[in-house]
Length: 84
Length: 221
Image (tube, rainbow over all chains, first blue to last red):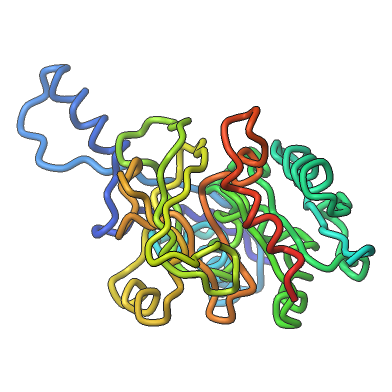
């Protein structure tokens, strides 16, 4: 069995308004940070997983991302995979 | 209809299950049965309500974890058989997450948790969920949600409009929902999801009875 560490990023699709991101942007400006053009909040999910090779693990992660981690009506996802 | 029984689903974190049961039993004399989310036997019930609340603590996304419960897995067959399913608030979120209804519900535009009475236009009476006898009818129902902003892409919205699947629209959109949408049905009309709470408007002493019609329509065939 091969072991992998997977880092999944889930983001709201660009077309979906992110009010939490807007509020954080507003606070960032109040803090004195200049030049912020856009600020959007997503999710970061770390998974440790085992499987027979990278392809099998990618299949599992694709399923997890598509069916559970992200709602593809409103979110996009991407992930990176590191063999341990 | 003596034996007609409405199943009220209870998830960990549901908090409107007893309100729904009270409204059905106490105000409408309709028998109810609580269904624990781990049950997949729906043979005893003739219609189902997915009540409001915070199933599984709203972890990940509202309704995202509830979708994988044995009961929701069994719901597919129930819906296909034409039996009626009503999803209120968190129940609506579960119905969109599980694909029974299109679109998704996301954080309110102003980030507030909104607890208020809202005026709603009945747009379509598909499935007979609303009394739409008059040319244009408005009802008043309470809302209580932080993530009730209905979102869908333009193709889905067109499909909703063309097929008369939009049941309710806010008169004064409180949360930024696309097209002021407060509730939609599936194409067959036997599944309704809405953010407002009809079970909290079933008695004059608590502010109105505009929710009675929708709950009563659960017993329609």
